[in-house]
Image (cartoon, rainbow, N blue to C red):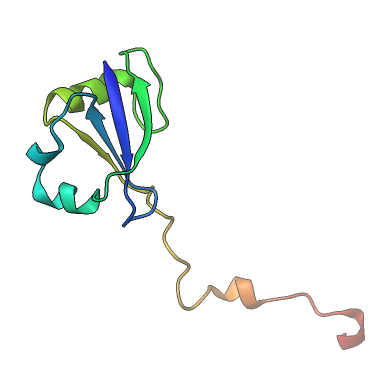
Length: 99
């Protein structure tokens, strides 16, 4: 299956995979807003065996069949460091001058 990948100009690292012949106007309004203006990142030939960064070709084909698209969001970032670092981060070995 040929697949068009749109890149959002409003949200970094956000992509929408659609079947090549998909009707953009049939997408949910929230996706239309996020991907207007349309910026095509690439066109791919998807097979079940194809390996993609975040999912398999088989998984992508399932999404393209129902609901008719695949929304790839930016990867989740690791949890931020706590405001107060543990005590061991503040401990240090005294220098020879301090002993």
